[in-house]
Image 1 (cartoon, rainbow, N blue to C red):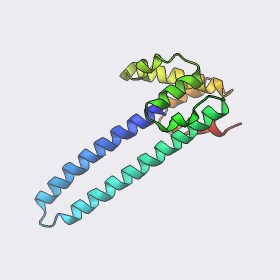
Image 2: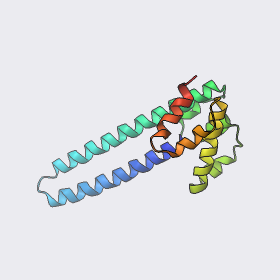
Image 3: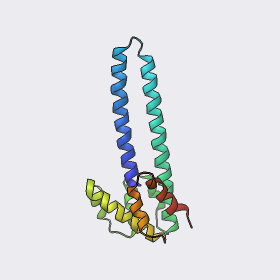
Image 4: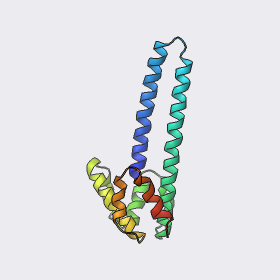
Length: 149
């Protein structure tokens, strides 16, 4: 979840910067800048809606996983840094791993280890955590761990 949230915010920032830059250049080159501004606004709105939908899906999945593993404070799934603490609690890992999750390359490895432990906590094979590296599977894995029996 944390990876998706962080990458969603990064993608949103990149999209916003590119939209603003392209909007400024398009307005400077054309006589009527309203079409470029309208297009920029539509692209930004689409990116925001997709990012919000992914965030809601991942938060619901993590909250359901926490509820099914009888972890206290499942509502922490909705708060950006607190969801990392919730993941560590579900995975039964020490809280100081939060620092490791924030280090770029180390965070990727530790994040996979955490998702492997979350899969084991749900009674699934731990290799489901490794699937979080696969681009489309990283959407499927949290949903499978949350809503499968």
